[in-house]
Image (cartoon, helix red, strand yellow):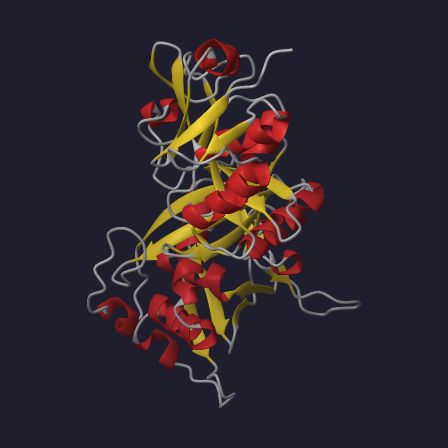
Length: 400
């Protein structure tokens, strides 16, 4: 019976000689060649081989006796950042039939163009590090860590919970492109209330074909054509030059003012009211709403699903309404996810057969996300619609 080889810790790598190159690297994708038949293994690779019994032990110092898996695991957890969670993910993906390599120099995975936050690259089944066919760039995340939303697209997230179970998520660049063919009328006249706008004589197509607002309906209603618009819908229509305001009711419910709504223009009046209701988040939601409408998608409130919007890609009539395809949650450009929050959003979206999309918004002048200057924001003061960069991030469950 062949004696299993022994490794020797050198810095942050374990060197193994003998027939290690053929035994571990060439046939099973472990480590990196050093010359001849000797290879170097990362700590997680070494721990996996020790656990499997393919290594008999590792000498932690030149003259020390080799130690087994338990001692090596504890020593590595003390010496290497997040070793325990990285090992769990490495071992799980190995058991699923993938070859992996650390995504940093001098390991083979360091040749892959991957962000620093990526821990491993997992190769296509049947591929080794030498072939370079990467299937998953894996970022390992502990349940209690947080991770920045910006730049996540293209990564596979492996979240390790407190009981060492692993949940995988695929983060991709989201794309929302609709086919709703509806042009709003040239002119609508509305009344600005404390948290919505009412259009008393809306044309039928505004709701039935454009899916704007919600009709005021009821049994034996004597009023026809009245549609309530959310402040986001109203601000978007006002910014497009469609909506004007004849009357404004103050937030405290004071008497209607016939001229106040037109003093600064309908856009300023509705946007200012939106900021009164929900602060600067209104600007982010409005920016995303306008982007979705510009993409011929129809955004409606996602309140029932805990999101900002649900989207319909192809609305012909409300009477023949398809299922909404996406849930959209609007977050700041520098938002950091907690894994629990992320899991909840994705699980809920999957449960109602929708794709979870996060809209990362950097509104003009707020300094969040890449490129923000944090300067003075005059647009917030004068009620104008603030411009925003929007990055779409789609995240869903993944079974490797």
